[in-house]
Image (cartoon, rainbow, N blue to C red; front, side, top):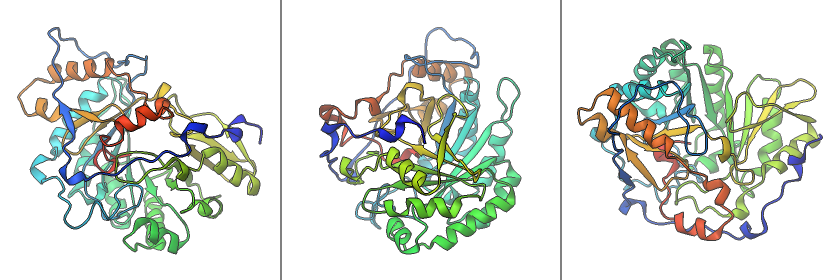
Length: 387
């Protein structure tokens, strides 16, 4: 394996970092209503931010609820039976989501991912998929319409989702060993049920399926090679995600991060790998393929190898707030514009103005202790805006 990524090491000043927890029940995420420019222009299909990054991907969270309590996302000690989730009246309606999506597509979005929480918990999610599947890009291409799920409901939903127009799915699975996986999801959900959901989705044509494994050192990193072994030759793309400091509830420490370079090295020692090119500019995963032709894996290295420089993603929360970074500390209240009677052209220009002013690059600044500490207790939870 000839690639210098295998030699990456953690910056020395990040090894002892701890992100503190706080009580989310008393937290209200800050947001502001985007302003509408005085001069309105029709969208051109391309808008770039302050660093020249185009808008290409839109991630839409359709619910803040989840039936798992994964330790890195919705730990049970915070998201317990007394935790107050958003009331239905505060969620964007399917019609509002569709309208917003059309406005983003007019600015260059070609890929829409539905997230949560667990998106399959949203009632009649197939209807939303059907509505979004009708949208085409300015060049006439259909959207790349995807969904990320824990697969707990996928077996019963896969066929309906495919029939509604969903392109493919990504499935979260953090271990192939049942004991380890049950400990990770913290609701005693079995690996076999996730695998059944994956098989059903594959049979329905929701492919290529991607399986995402969040790797936490000392918790599930012994599952890296077993996961690779299980999915090799299956046509399923396995991706390993570094444990990230998203939100403020997951007790993130730099010591718990296993660098993607080490993930690649462990797999390469068992199943030789070679690096391959990205599918498109701004793709989050670095791609590797097995030299024997048994498929590919990916690694997502937000902590040890920031990819802010070509990040093209915008996130829309369950209640209609826009976030220009996964590690954001405040949002922009698009719902206020949608429900205030503004025209599509007015909202479109507000979106363009917001994106043009975007400068986010938190992952490039993470090694600065002052930056981490200043943002630690204000970052938005992953379950609220999706991954």
